[in-house]
Image (cartoon, one colour):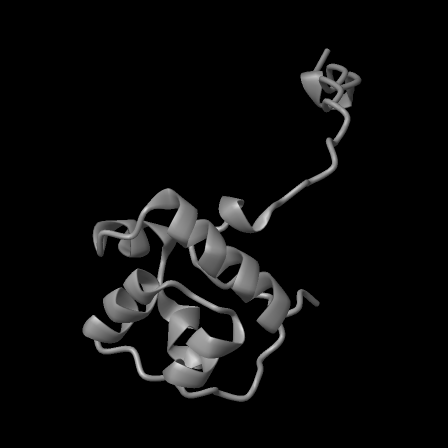
Length: 103
């Protein structure tokens, strides 16, 4: 008898889907890709608005950033490679979460 008409083997059941819980630190970019776009703010005003330390300001400005929207393109690893401390990156992440609301 042909195997064509025999019932297929039972499929292995999939594991139940776990909820996706993503924090901003799970995203390799400082600003999550799905964050709503915001008008650009000059870097100096952005720094003052979120009370960044002089080191954060000088580091980011020293890398040539001039506005808030340019920060949308930087990764957490790049911030670390620039010499920012984990606590300073956390400050940027907090500001990003406030300035760029999630959809």
